[in-house]
Length: 132
Image: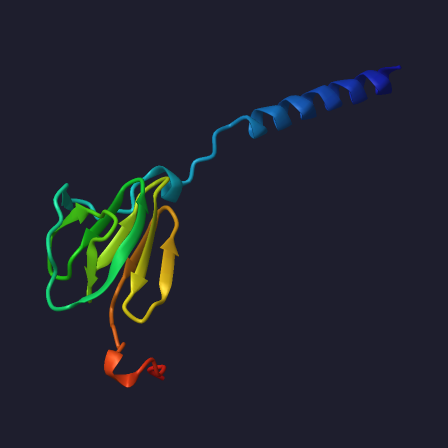
């Protein structure tokens, strides 16, 4: 009888510990904070970049920020905004972005993503030949 009581106490204790652990909120820094650099100012108005555009935004959902190369501020991206070489695209929590580059490739970014367009080697004069 004593062993049975001890087993019952052990099962109850284990169940309570398991319940306490499972019901704790998970703490994940990446999921709870913004991906935007500290001190970045964001305006609501589009600002043109440098040079010829290398693509354009097709879709934005949530807070999508574009920062042109060499700039300390960004803007809220919207559909049809041109993208330029050196642009960095940030998607905040629960945000998505889709854009098309001039070579026809389409990229979709999920939330909490940072992507920089480092290089564009597409040459429309080559009649669609791959650059590599």
